[in-house]
Image (cartoon, rainbow, N blue to C red; front, top):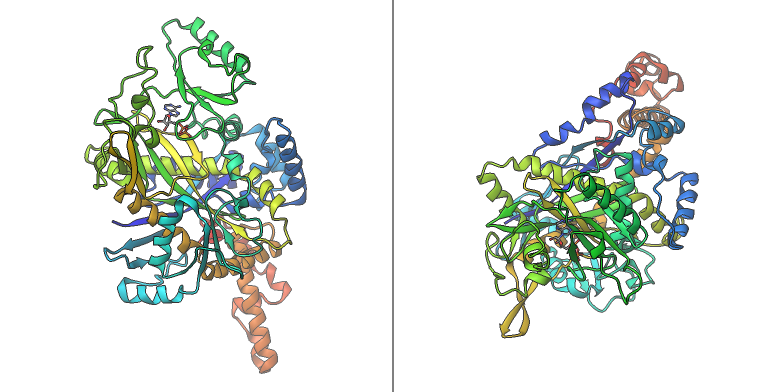
Length: 604
Ligand code: ADP
């Protein structure tokens, strides 16, 4: 079975509906386009978004915010920072006023697909489609060539912890070099099991964790980040359950629920309480009234998030399940996200019933965590990807498709959810990043695989439950070998999904690929500086023309051709002279709305 990442391209724009230009973009960026995007197509965040926060002012602003957060103060996302993606089209003050007056977020997706296949013998057969549209290698023979090319990549696995097994397999498949004890000289890639700070002495290469990611993905911080965006863009950020932060919002929670019940006495809401730094279902419980919140040692309510419990999840075989999707954040600046097309579905082990006072404490009915359900007598270990208590996500999609569900719509909604969530996190992540790796100082670059936990409602709407900074990459599962005795045994489903995710991540982080990428980024940067007011595609085309013109000029000076230089009609060479910028051809092009303006940004 193949696994693959989708390159995700995000376009995010604030627009005035009345403006003509904006109207054209409106058509292009309408959220409605999301639903028409096929399952094998995805979104990427427009670089303008990240670019908008690299100016010194917003940087220092963000930094002071981070400090206040560290002091325990409320997180605030700078709306301007987030909503100034139209820098190429408008000045920043316009962008700012648009945030406050017209909080409309438009996201549009396009994508290229990265596919790979693991043959039964473990060799990698792949068709790696580069962003220029050329197939780098095809089939077994070319695959071998590509593997040969990558042989030199070195990976320090000394801190990999529980992901070690899957990582080793991936490195073997790619025929890269593993350094299990670390290496005296630098490695290309450092694989950390927990955090960026697992090894403090890295000054080059790439680390598989971002500084601050763990902090940003704690339940309270994630809730705050998504909630802030929900306040700005209520329609777009409606995929996260209504949440309250405890203990500070206890009064608010109590009052709101009391009012709700007073207005409609038939309402019987249920809430789920999640400790801030908990994981694997630890400490989670359901309540039906704010008065049922548990207190610790008779004093304070624990730091936690309490949120609306989704009462009508989609069921399969009468069981509740959730989806674990793996998302690679390849870079923050520019923002690059890849979504693994294969993930896992974790099933409850007791048939679902809507919450009632009687079943509120049935964890095997309400919580889908593998770590909990594996201890239920009903847990089904299966070597098949489409049966048992842990299955592949694709097997769920096939099953839904066979029942007539529009799975393309489900998938594109999921992709939109992922993109919007990452967008909500990016501003603060950048602050953490710059604090640990200040611009100009030697340091590694970072990437990270995140684990998105998503629930589908009965109506097939994806709901974000949480994002894990350290999704389990174990490829063994616990099995009760004798009563009360658990052992780790190989899990084919986990291996299938997780080795694929790690292997494709490594491929995407291949330094050879990144070097090419860095060159293109630099070219775009120069183009943006040279032709500020234009869409990126225009900028790049113009810079190319300038280069061609310069080349032409050079060849003239090397081999003087006096007659031609006066009669040259090549528009590219005309651009070499400053006056040609006002040539009719170029002026026309500058004003023409461009359909693909952001594509050129990241598809290289
Ligand atoms: P943890 O990090 O402890 O796993 P989660 O937020 O993932 O915490 O919640 C654990 C489980 O509880 C989820 O896998 C899901 O089955 C269930 N759950 C969490 N939030 C909700 C919710 N708002 N509505 C319904 N079920 C939920």
